[in-house]
Length: 496
Image (cartoon, rainbow, N blue to C red; front, side):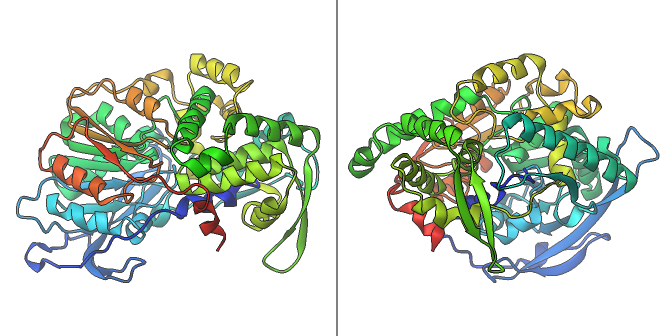
């Protein structure tokens, strides 16, 4: 979420395991451009160029409003190179707000290339993302003054007021704010299917990309061939249950107990966290933060900052490692680690800002009345309250933006679906993921032990499992064991 001093802490999620390589091999005989596409050499961050095509198609911004703008949605298509290529495979990025094209440029590039065995692979930029984004970020007049102690109530009100400003700002730019919903995204997938001239699509997504995939199954399952999703976010799970976060830390403690050194270092993580939160509630810590331009920014590190830092770093074991060290040091009255990480986690920009697609999509998916009451009750005593998400109270700024409860019902379908879940995923919890897909009769689930949210490139076995599923093999119940990261040392790799 933009506007929080913790937004830069999300860089931790980028520090994952690597070691995959790919040898590009073009297959000119199967390479052909549609009339609306242009041939290109796609060059990922690794520098290995591959033949591809870039294309685009247009859709209404809000199909319920004939006066809304027309959007141009863009993609990169990697042609199939297998002998038995099937339906096009559409990659759906997470977020919401992630770019599929950018994902193909990063560490997942080898997996994009591997998937070409089964069909054309399309790195798709959803509406409002990457190359498909024509909307300005909104910076409001509402400030979170870093040197001041701001209560939770003030924090929420400032964000609500900032969103009101931004909604008005986007409307002035002729942006239809009701057009940024997951159902509109689903209709974009149907438009893409027709644009490609194919009978069915295969969907491949992670996190919000799984949310979109599940919504698509509800509306167009007869036009979906297969689905591969990881780190699933159910249609009623945009705001996570705080009690599930507490359960996650029980799994963390169990993982810690398997390593003798970590077991001795962190005997009771949850108790340590509660002590640190209580200390910061009583006496926030003033820290000087050196900015890139050499100036120093005074910041008051509050209990909420600590909870937001934890929320941003529990997605995967490597950033979790640094977080555990930070809690331990603050519990002992030592601020050295906090001072060291401060330049990475504290943003001197005080004005609250929002990217339209990200905030509007989450608000639209929303929270049912019963679930919201449960969340509020659990948040009273849970470790991280609701800071794993943008404030649920943003839904109250304009209730017309929130979809009705019918959207949040789980899909029922016989579309073959593979769900990959990491046992140490701190953002989409494994039990919640399984609940999100209970209505799918052709479901296959695979657990990857000691891996978190960003699991696609964790192990070659993950790639092999996806390949087996795509070939029609039964992988249901398969378990992949990855060596647990050394939690005592891993986090500090981010500081180098």
